[in-house]
Picture (cartoon, rainbow, N blue to C red):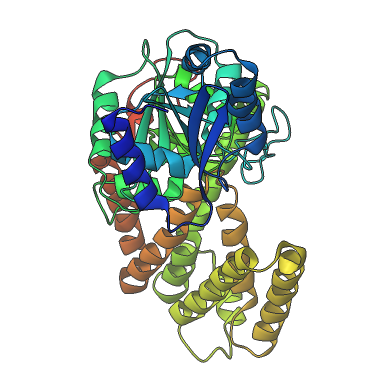
Length: 449
């Protein structure tokens, strides 16, 4: 077979780079006057597709010209730019066919992660139950099946200097803010991380402020949430190998909205949203409020209630701050254990552990009965927040407010809440004010889902 000098040099270079790998294959195909060479890595290539699309047609067609024209017409053909790009695509599952001195590259990767998963984190009682898979092409297909606007745009990027993960940037070019879109593109192009394997990691490295507690981008597993946000003019990022999507920009209100809000009647939705905001407020305030009232300002309560609280603390050998901190840390340990333990035993272990610890602590006069009630109420209230990133931020923030209330009582707790609101007002997500929904009416019905 006559090869061009450039093709021969390229093949020699690729072989030199990949020859140490035992799964690298360089296979010659020859029959009569036809000849071709295949280069691929067999562990990432779909053998059935390779046989059907590449090998079998070679032996069935009359000439090299017909075979080359056939390969050029396949939709899986990829553009060849540089030698470095060639070798990266080979590691992803492409095959290079050398025929008549020309290099043709086809995508025949083996995909084992394209199973559509059920929503496990953002569950809903009504509405769609399926979430994303770990294959980016499948995820794009899931979004397009629900969003049939021709203005839906998909841009493919590559992130990770060593992992070379495919990344899809999706938006509706009619509704998206160009300023936001340009900022997201700029952030993606400036990424210097060698390996990015999850959307949560991608969200972290995209954030310019390293020590921001409250999330500015939302990570979701639900296709219906992605579609609602696309229609509202937001940008969605999908990463190959991860069953979650990033939505940007996101404001405070977005993290307290659940997908069930789209499926229930108006007044039911308003009631449920009120419960979530109330739960967040209780989670933030109750620990600090208990310390402030029991140690600094008992006159806020009626006499009977103040005496009841004081009586429940009889025999406890340390101040209320230590009591609250001890129980909150135990609760956080139980939550962390429930996440790390195998699912089969996590629920039982943490429930039994919580009951035993709570009962033993009250009988040993280490904590009061009222403290057990408050810690349980805080834990339940925290779980009412539907998005995990905001849930975690509130869990951390309640310790800050507890510390402030320990120093200066009710006055300090009030100033701490005002400071928190001022801090949130100072934040922005890709130029959008973080508390935007409280000062500006939504542009359309779908925004903020």
